Each structure stands twice: as structure tokens, then as C-alpha cells.
Length: 232
Ligand code: SF4
Image (cartoon, rainbow, N blue to C red; front, side, top):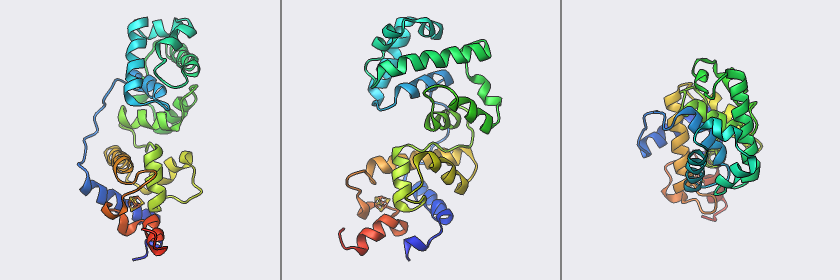
């Protein structure tokens, strides 16, 4: 079979099925409270998980609660999150986000998003400073079980190599392009996201994908192109 001839919609569903078999299916359960998820995701930009967690807990321990963080001296706040990358940029963004939430909702909570339609919730979140599509989709899927698809670097790379999205599709556009081809069900999208993420971390790595071990190689454009050129 020529992988390039398989329509992207069909290929997406086959990818989903093959990775469902390869990796354990997960139940979609919120791992952290919504405000925790929002601020942690902002802290996680270009930062590993251990350093992000360290910053999060140091910050809250130091300032006590979200009001304390919001009213803190911005340089002092930056000091408490210095295990993350770009603390000087993240500190004012976090304060601005907290202020916006407080001004608009009267309290520092985003639980109201549970009752908001998906598109409206996406627009509201991405209107916050420092909150992009990835953060918004992670939050809406993981915490509110809304049918959206977070596309991080691993999901993007695997999708592009297999041929679910074209070479010109940007990471931001990939959210909508992939979502359009997948079941609009939060648990399915959660598993698709997690499985592609793991696959990108373990098998389809950036520098040396182990294609011979990959369950997707039969339908993968990259694999077929590399084999045709005889370099594998
Ligand atoms: S066959 Fe290779 S390039 Fe294609 S998804 Fe698998 S590891 Fe990635």
C-alpha cells in the first residue's frame, strides 16, 4: 500500500486505532484544579516538569494564595519562579491573568468555563496574556472535558511525519485540522493526544525515530519516503 494514497481522514482513524492497541487506554480524569492547571501550564513553557512544579509550589508557599500572588511585587514573584525559563516575562503575565479573572468574575476562579460553550471558552482563554492555543486546549480538555485537541511538539511531529497534516500546516492550525478528522468526544481526543505524545517521546523521536519498531510504519509517509530512498 502506498501510504501517500491513504486519505488523511482514514489515516487519522487508523493511527488512533493502532495507538489505542499499542498503548493502554486512559480514562479522562482531571489531574489538577483548573487554576492550578492554568498557572502551571503558563509556568511550563520551555521548562521541564520538575522545575515547573518547584516554581509553582515555591510561589504559592511564598505568597500564600492567588490574591497574594496577584498583589506581589513583580520582581519578588519572578524570584520565586526562577526555576522556570523566562521568569521575568512570566511573572507579569501571571499577575495580569489573575487580575483579569478577578475583575471579570469577582473571584480568582475559572470554574465558570465548565458551563461555557467550547468556542466561547477558547476565545476567552486565548484572550488572556501568555495563554495560547496549547494552554487553552489542554485546560479545556483535561479539566473540563471539552472536545478539543491539544497539539504539542510531539503530537505535531508524529502527525506531520505520518501524513495526517501537510507540511505547510502550522502547529496552531493543526489543532483544528486534526480535530476535524477525529471523533468529537473528549475521551477519544484525550487518548489520541496522550498516545501521540508518548509515541513522539519514545518511538518517533525528533532526531532518530525507531521506524522499524513503529506500529504506524505501514501507513507513514515519512517511513515510506525514507524506505524508497533506501536510507533506512
Ligand atoms: S514510522 Fe517512523 S516516522 Fe513514521 S511515525 Fe513511526 S517512528 Fe515516526
